[in-house]
Length: 271
Ligand SMILES: C[S@@+](CC[C@H](N)C(=O)[O-])C[C@H]1O[C@@H](n2cnc3c(N)ncnc32)[C@H](O)[C@@H]1O
Image (cartoon, rainbow, N blue to C red; front, top):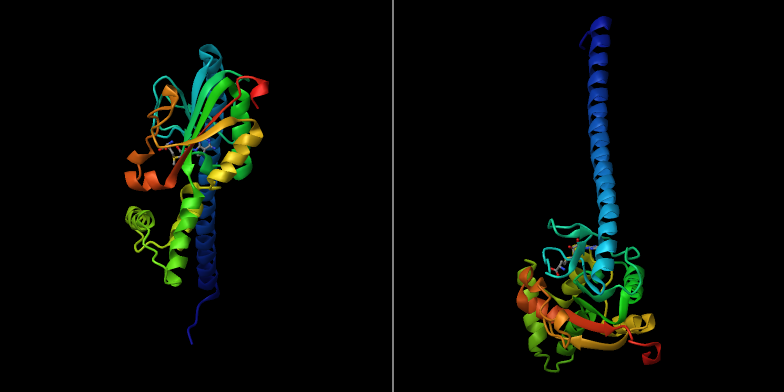
């Protein structure tokens, strides 16, 4: 049995208590600092957004019909108003595509977004399409490049048909899974894994199909909805804009990206 004098015991307990309290309060102080930093960052971001949205508003008005590039990332297009929620370049302006566009009605000639709309929840995507319609001049065009969920779903057809014994040799699917697995360092890639990646990874919120996106564009009032190859358009202003192939494998990008263009009618009778 160990005998400790009452005074020594009291000192020991006090020291243990102080140490425990000290650790907790230090962790608490660190937590407060982190929250304060996050708060300051959000406050700065909000100030930048409000300041930049005024710039976007007046640029669009001055340049009418202006060209608006949304979710630009590293792709800074000459002759366009380049915007992003988190700009990566000095010339890029802060704009949140999930909010109403800070632009007057009928001031834009062209709107372009590449691998952006899938970062918005569906309702915000629908709102962005309606806002694009509002901001375009009659005859103005919207171009959207985004993954096509149908491509991922078709990977399951391949798995199902191989179970039934029907020859399932589908070159694009095989190639896609191989390249996708290599790109994501997740080999062997399966249809099941691929669909989870595209739906859950990279902050994606909603993956569209061609039919669903076409339906929403049509409901917003757009006409002349057409699909295009990457870089191709009948409208010279919308040609050779995509750059996503520089950040992902070019072939993967080719297989997963659909590009739709839609036109605001020149007159009400055109609807
Ligand atoms: C996958 S990157 C695409 C970048 C470039 N357009 C490309 O195709 O390589 C998605 C971009 O959308 C931006 N983004 C995400 N949510 C956004 C929002 N609510 N408003 C505007 N931009 C957003 C991100 O900051 C990022 O730059």
